Length: 171
Image (cartoon, rainbow, N blue to C red):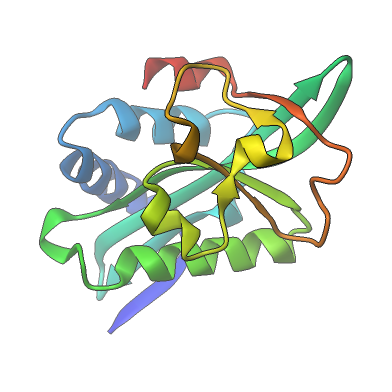
């Protein structure tokens, strides 16, 4: 049985292994570690999927902003989501997203931003960010840059460019 909970100190090495295996490179795992060691880290939003003591998947949400003409609005980035290759296509990623979004709501976050596969993330209610006047700070396919309102009308009167902390530049 797979359990979902916030990471513990005992999980950090296993998370690095899972994220590296899922992406086939260390960049995203390094991003997780950098966020974990930054003032932006929210421990409750670093969630693992575990079977016994084995970490099978991980998802991380961390603070970002949406900025336009001096207006700065808070949001949360979903990045990265990783499941070990041997456990992909078994619903673990889906459950990590649901668990994480639920935890974001509990912590009163209202906007989540993700860069990812549109068909996958639309299942959770994500919509193309440009529909809301929200833009990526770098060139990406329009349909892959998405937002989710965790509270009704959270994006009403909010538009602009998403600003990620500089450590995202390494990915």
